Image (cartoon, rainbow over all chains, first blue to last red; front, side, top):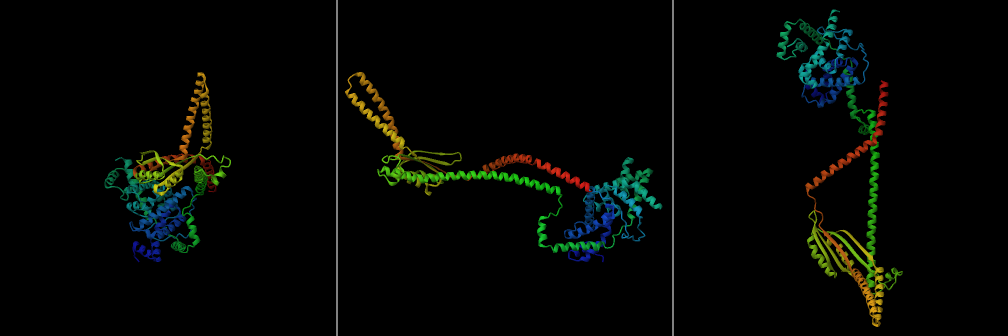
Length: 186
Length: 394
């Protein structure tokens, strides 16, 4: 089952529901984590990830393959995140971190699992960024996308991406390093 | 390159985000700047740490929930009832704040009231026009009824026979006195091939034993030809001539008016006064025959002179009336139909009209805004109230 994205999309458009399931499985964690880092809480991130996939499904026939599928997907996700942040600005919600057991911790030796406390400390710092910086920072640091990809997703120039990322890194450098070194000691 | 500027570049140095020249500068600076070295290390560690963080995984049932929602959406699309479809026409897909809806409703209301006000005004105008038209047609009817009747009278009386009609009509008058009527007609006729009018009219007038007493032709500012004639025609042929002129042959009648002036009283007056004067004259003449003294003769001749002048004045007036009565006057003006206006002056006029209309509308808008100011204030208050309540709720 090593179909490319475009082949999957073709199958979905021909009415193959299973292909859509495959597509969701391929991208669900990327979308979910991106949303989480930008929005700062799991509940909203989950809702938004679902909404992203529903949008994808509805607009799949409009996807023309001008950009790669992942670019398109991230564009939809980040746009939804931006709308959500804008909504919150008008109507601030009290964020409740609710870590229930449904969030499974997968064992993976190469990746670092964070304690709940440490994670929320880091996320707090990310939340303090302005929305534009938050989006670029998330896509670069957590999703590992290249500058060019990020520029494509957001529809801005490379220079803009660089300046936003630079600001975000500068703003977070001290605090983040402190948290990491402490966490490392534990 | 200063230390501060290098510091600005450091965040992007860690993942090849700089141009080669910038990279060289940073490298050079790093060699002898421990502070920057430390910062760079922090950036690198942060970057490495974050990129190695384990992703959160979505909870179980994530994709199933999406598929379910997508499926529902599909079903909704397929099984939309007729009612839903109708509702869909009226329900906006975008949520509109209640304040905006209220504002729109109020503006609509005000607009309708102003509009209906305008409408009733135009109604009045229409009524007025109708009334005017009606009175005009009434007049026209009056003329068309009155003229044949009057012409019978004159015809009959001029022939010396008192008809039943004239008996009935003239009972209050002296039945033996003829009615003296002066008849005039005025016509404006539009005719495209206007040049043949001259000959046509001449023939017609000749046939009816009349004559053209006056004529004029000219070009107006639009280069349209105008022919104007004053026709005198025996009163017996008056109606025939007018009817013939109104026929299709002579073109489209634009306006037609017929007036009948009753001068019987004046005529009788004249006759009596003349008779008296003549009798007086006769008496003076007989007196002159028997007068002997020079003084007496002179006095009588003076009187005779006065009487003669008066008689002549009255006789002249009587002759004039006789002429007017026995010959009716018809004035008729022929003109070419208005040419279809050429493009450019039309455009210029259209633009001029547009500008004047625009200015007029602008004034109307000012008036309109003035009218709705109280409503706007009301809306503002309602909106503030609504917002206040919403904020309190939150």
